[in-house]
Length: 162
Image (cartoon, helix red, strand yellow):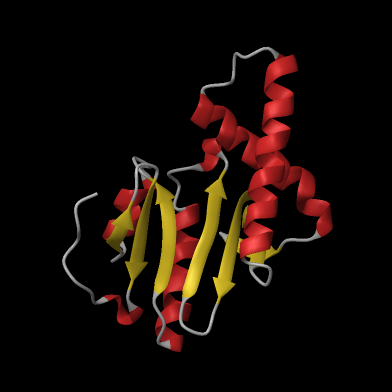
């Protein structure tokens, strides 16, 4: 796995990836195209504008496997933390260590800078198991999201219930 900065030409890939995620989340694969397409466009635009409004200086990356785009990550490098704003991998490439490899690199960067890594993840997302295995701990939650943190150096309090 490698990664590179996202460029304007990556927009169709990122759009397709977000639409794939939303389609799966909503169970919308069999919805009529006339219903599904506008909904996916709204979801894509909302997600992108929300990220860019909240983290205008975040770095967007394209994750590559064998030179082909397979994922997207958004990382905010703030003065007090590194925040994994978004990470997504194509469904056909999940479970092959692509996201984990990028997370390991991010954790090494954070450790070198003496900063924690923070993220939010959908409650029930199977990635929570990966985050816990990598030393993240739950710091809060609501009905939809779980907030997690991995302290600099990976040493933190015992895992909270998720």
